[in-house]
Length: 229
Image (cartoon, rainbow, N blue to C red; front, side):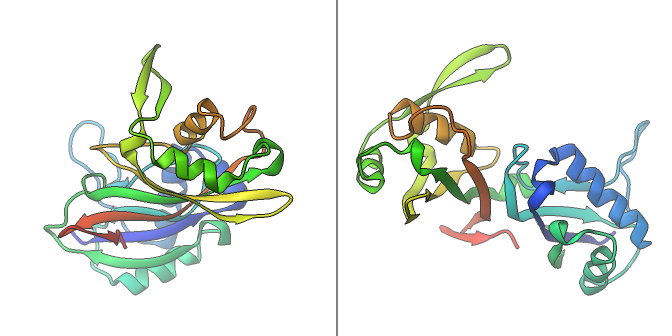
């Protein structure tokens, strides 16, 4: 059965879809398009749809990557055209390729993701943001408290931050670009990075008005980071 890798976006109001709702939206679009989904075997068969790295509610993205397996022969171009007719612009499918039979699962391939974080100026204090981030990157450790299964654990997230830089700043807001570990081996959510920035004093107060957008998601291939699609 053919498997197709899809790159889509999650913008505007659709950024507030949960991961489960996004999967349902894609499943409905596939059904309405007339394409036949393949299903797993067993007592509770489910459609063969898998996403690379789920996002938290409220995070927009131009790099949502999913695999779908179909029970019919078709082409990547036809899949993209059919889905385009049944998805809104803010959930647009930008690219579809046919995955080879020996391709690894998406979650096992994901290594890092690039995010753009917009921070209102009133959360930044008086010290230059760029200087504070440079000092943060010079640190050997950066801890953050995480709630996990009813308990609190302290995690050193510094090894999970590959890049962190100010890419824009004006009187209203600053934009920070972050490349963070993502996937099954090591994973740093943007919310945990924001919490770490608060704990070390770079951000002041509750992160009201902070927005997060995923720009790209990468796999590691022969020592080089390459987009999943």
